[in-house]
Image 1 (cartoon, helix red, strand yellow):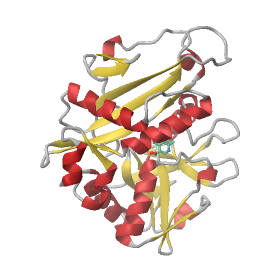
Image 2 (cartoon, rainbow, N blue to C red):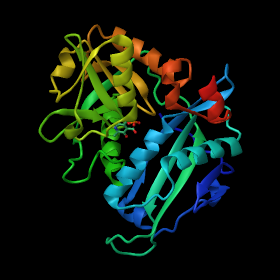
Image 3 (cartoon, rainbow, N blue to C red):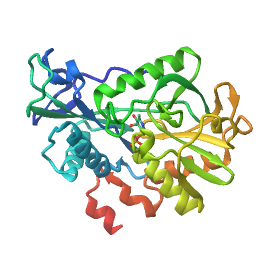
Length: 319
Ligand SMILES: Cc1ncc(COP(=O)(O)O)c(C=O)c1O
């Protein structure tokens, strides 16, 4: 899918102030633009008509991950995760967003000069834009294993959302789309299934939900963690983190992707082979619907995942 260019009048947080998106620009020599030295995040917010509120999904966990991973590049993001969540809510209010949104936090090495050696000039920005479905995934996706291998932790850590590392995802997505697939599946250098270009992967096999471990060069997804929680608590499923072989994808009962943008996207074919019966599986369908209900604030047990933009937190907690 291709998203539209956001409205240039959107209010964003840039250089410690609220400015119009059209004014949030960097110098052509910026270190991050030349060398990929940025760390970003992706957070969703869902507007729930019935409750007339916009719920940011697990913003504190996303911002904690962002701050920790920025530390890998020794980029400092001064506000606390809670302050960043509140700042994001304020951006939504200033833009009067009453629809689903996507938040793009970006921290980066900001010096504008030639030279690879990093310094301590760091900056960060927060942008919120209206956002719909990433994939039309209700009927299931066709995925393909690509020839590019997932970036190794010994080269560029995939567990951090490092801007430069996304060249890996761009190459994989381009290859997958040109070959007629909706999304790419990466293998690691030693042949284990790692993840999609922009999402984590699960298989359902012999009654168990299985997903690759952090050591198979995955991004440790927050949606992945949410789906594991829902599978264990609501469906009493056995969830196992272990390496997955390529051909296991062909013999699994179900395969699906998870991620902030893709949400839970069932896969109905891998490498032109049908997964299970070649239709959306029972486990994926149930988990998908639980995830939708939980992220719209409709399941009280998961209300703590959500940061309401228009109602003060105290009102939610008291409810
Ligand atoms: C490479 C990659 N893997 C997995 C994910 C899923 O992570 P999360 O569920 O935290 O969005 C993403 C999306 O951000 C990603 O870019």
